[in-house]
Length: 162
Image 1 (cartoon, rainbow, N blue to C red):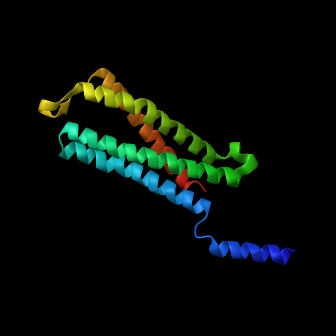
Image 2: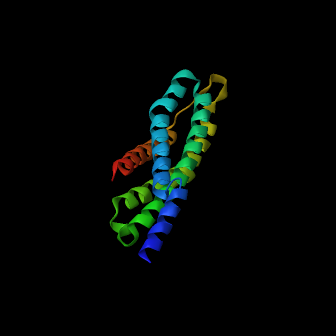
Image 3: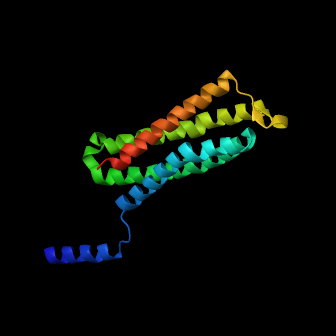
């Protein structure tokens, strides 16, 4: 019996191209790296080189794509952690990193981003290609930026966690 089980395991491993662990780690690395690149390089560069309205529109589209990649990557990571941790799931730091990131990402994307987009649309001065900032716009933009930063930190912690 042991030889049969061992042989069938070997056969299954030959056909396995990439494990759930490897795929989720790859997806998370891709998303966290992309998030850091978008936040630290791409969006500041857009606002430096383009008019404010165009830059804001492009930044919104990039963040939209990044959010969906993040939601999917985090779900894969959650599946992986659930399979690996099983009974000790609630004791796993990776589990809590994922839950926090997923929650923050969903709140940021589905609750805060729509507020920012609505305010940006109301405050856009199309003739001058600028967005007039109000305290309400600045507040929601700051909240979103802080959440983005926390997600980046948690994502980095998740990746370096063994």
